[in-house]
Image (cartoon, rainbow, N blue to C red):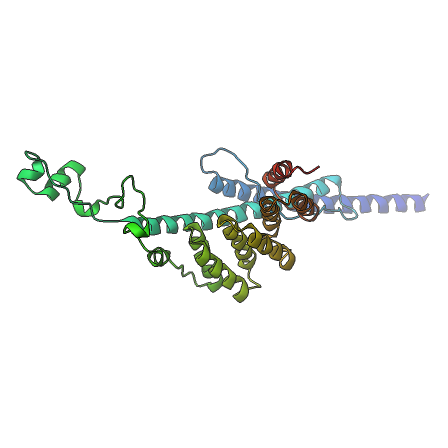
Length: 317
């Protein structure tokens, strides 16, 4: 009888210890969940300042790894652990989106500033009509009164009408002028700066110059994350220039040589597009299949829709 009582007491003590440890684990994980949810709300307010509550899935997301509860864990602890892991992954994804968005915003701002510098020109002089304010007084003062500011602060579109840029043969800027107008960044990261400069040349539709710059990025910085970006953008420059054959080679090289690069899935997608332009729809279908097989768990929902549309265009079965 005494032995039975001792065993029962020991079992009760052990159960209390397990429950106490489980409760302590639950409390700690609950604090992590509360902290992560607070950080998620803060990041979402930054991503969606209007309060729309939208959610933008990243194009390439990390593969989720299921959490296995250890011995002695309660179902509540296991559930909280899964929530913590999910929140941490979402927080990393949102942080990456914010950083990428800020980078793209800087690029757009730099390009717009370069465009303003390129197109800024003094206001053209006009012959005043008889009896007008400019005919009897100072033209600058008249424009000041009409515009509410200094004539020196106003700009006009380039000659040619409707703000359209004249071709070089008609007195427009030379190609050298257009290249010189593309600003070279200086962030302190030479690989990043080299890629961004290539991107700006591509955005300015200076495709041969962009291609040479992007090739140099891949050659000089093959281990930098931007190497994958540069190789993919090289293929897109060839596509935009109407050279799908060279584009297909550039895209395939990015997938073959840097399969873990951030733009490897994009290169496979654009490779299929280039093959369609080369009248090789069957090969394009094989590439779409490869893209889905290799990166199916990493590509976004929007890319999956694009793949489905591309398969329809190529007539894939």
